[in-house]
Image (cartoon, rainbow, N blue to C red; front, side, top):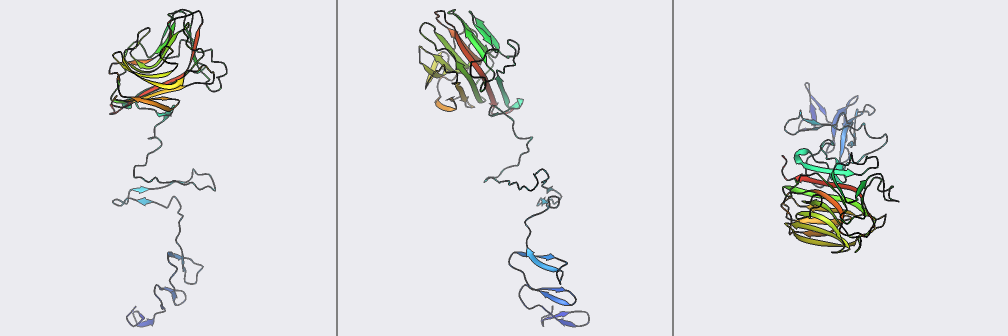
Length: 342
């Protein structure tokens, strides 16, 4: 368009139909003016219009096989979206968190067991066992067992009234022998050492009979250096010792010197009370936090053992009037996540 308001052509000038700011010069049967659209509208081809064009609201929807996001440095690198897996007539919303990061695939996400991510071998190790009813006694429970003085272990007898919520249990029975004891351990070797990564231990169990003056027993479960009838000298564990407290006691012990945390929760013999004990040892092995039913009961920073240990649990008599004691184990879980993968 020339300064005089005409369109310059090869043979002369034609008066411009444009009259206002934002007008578009177009053609129908003759040169024509298309007035500017509303703010935010875009010029769109439309054969039904006289000029073949119209102003329309910008589209907020795109076909997934057309829409692409291109890399700013190499436009051959593209990101596409695929919506075919969504239910018909359904809109799914993906909310971006207020943080920067890298999108992970489902194959990258950790799998979970008992609420904890399953570790790759190079990241550490973990063990979980649930005493399912279909386990055969003495063959599939993967622990060395100490059965002495009239004690027995059996996975065919569950605590009455608990099968619905605890479908598989191992029953520990200690009889009328004052030396009777039954226990579980990871094996004959002590090969677990704290430090170099976080440790987590959990167990769920139930007592059918309380310890008493004439029918005394000691219960311990966790990581210790004890085997069979050994006295614990090093360990991180939970204890029920009536002569010390009627409550569950959390213990860190190094070279026979103990730090105790009293849970304030008394041991119960109700068939519906199945406490979950848990402790978490920090990566540097300088503190241990203890939990009962997922509630913290305190943290120990003293007498944390440096000696090698094993997973260990036992119930053992120290006196007996002829009565037997029953203890039921639902599950044990422990894991070690290395600070540095190997």
